Length: 264
Image 1 (cartoon, rainbow, N blue to C red):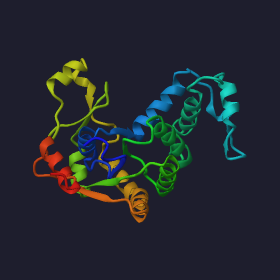
Image 2: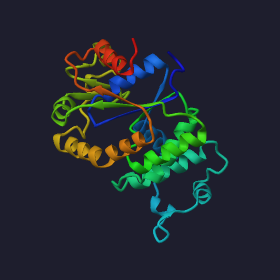
Image 3: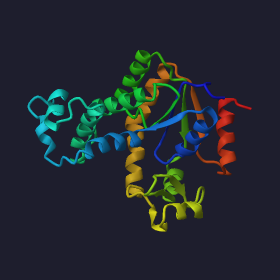
């Protein structure tokens, strides 16, 4: 089934169960996952590797309401001519906001996504965590048009808020490799414990609290749902897959995905 799709967006509330469905898409169609979390880690890492701990506000012109030019930033960091210079600049801009506990503006998130998406050839990708706002959705539609590629479908993982909160409280993550597990549905195997050296590497995410979950659910309703509505208005097909299943085995998850996609 490889090459059947160019790009698929997976959307859903935080904790709805997106990752198991993404796993089905990557395994079945040979697609590659591109998540906003990985994008931020990559570009923040590029800048952090420089070891420059000086105040980043020197790169931001408060009166002009933006950063100094990219060329000026590269010169100040002494990275002009490096192959990864553009990525380092993007990482610096993202860190400027992250360090202040601020949301990274759409214009920066869009630039980060575009760089990562283009590095993957703009095709064969499962988009995870992007777009999250209407402005990001508009940028994505423009980007794929310019790249002459398609957004074949949206897979929306649907789940009720109460079920999401109950389910997410059992979510665990490996600090060493970032793999996500669940105490009931996908417990970490013993060999994973051994590979990661210590059982303590399997932890609960610090933001997996009831209050944090409710805030993320509200953010989906106020920001991401309008982005989804915009994409649907553009005529992108949607597959609605249930997030809650009586049987949450890998085979059952795959069957639920295949059913909504009409695959036999």
